[in-house]
Length: 410
Image 1 (cartoon, rainbow, N blue to C red):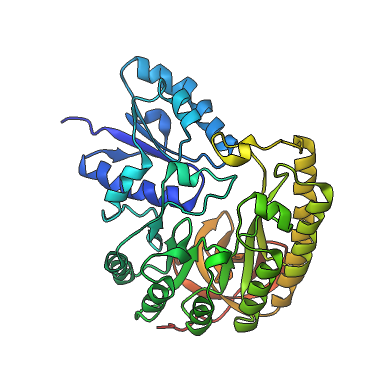
Image 2 (cartoon, rainbow, N blue to C red):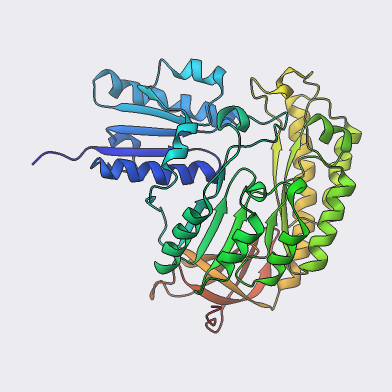
């Protein structure tokens, strides 16, 4: 009997890369490859790269010492795709056997993916980006925005609901610039029968309409959690980043969201140490964090991406200063997030249980906060909705006790 060849697929960085990996897996399955979670036993390795940060690129280089030994013996084929800048591509070409442009993956979007979860799924609705933020590689690696046909998305979502998936996330670099009316798409899915949560990521503040706010507020299945990337708290830095809004406009949007959806959880993305950012301008980011009181933030120390406009700007903030600003902003975030979360103590919240760890279960609220609770390992609660009464609230997680079962929200 012929041995089945094994593949290892490695998506780095964002959710979009993980979604692409699921579609690539569909192709490999049709080619009769068998999946392995250990790259050392793979016959084929597919890397889906991420050029957003240098650290993600460096991780790939770190793997080659082992991979090249197998390549030289003819025991391994390596494939590279994903977000790869031209400068990185030149360095990777001698190391990989095959390199595929991620833009070519658009034609695979209608393949039924091999979902890595039986209860959570990401559904891409748009790929690429037209915004050209000066720090970002996406428009150069994934190309301009291309929206997936409306009916194809509806068809995929209906299949997921039929298979009893509990959490569906609509995915794109800028979901709310979806060509065929994003609020309408969100509403149609939210009206579908079934017991599930609906999420989306990532929106752009400039495209966040009042119609979208109204629909999020109106439908219980749409999770009351929004990641609203701000990137900086200072108008001059936002202009250098090519972010087409002011902090006043951002705060006005936040106020409209909070007024319409009082139980909303807001997270953000923010870059510290952008070229030219002064200490005073950084303080504006601190003030913004204190004012908005984000539940979560993804804070990045600015990293040069070759080929982007920001790479040509004078790099005025050294590594140590970036680190200091990161720590300071994180400290503010931890404080405000903990104060927000403490309001949930003694409340009973609905969670989706994700996994069992040693002696406790882990799940998430619709606000995307991790919850740990004690319960027997059997029966298996994975992928099920449960109620948990919160007894402890930290900056980024809760602890509690299993409460009465929840009702179906269909």
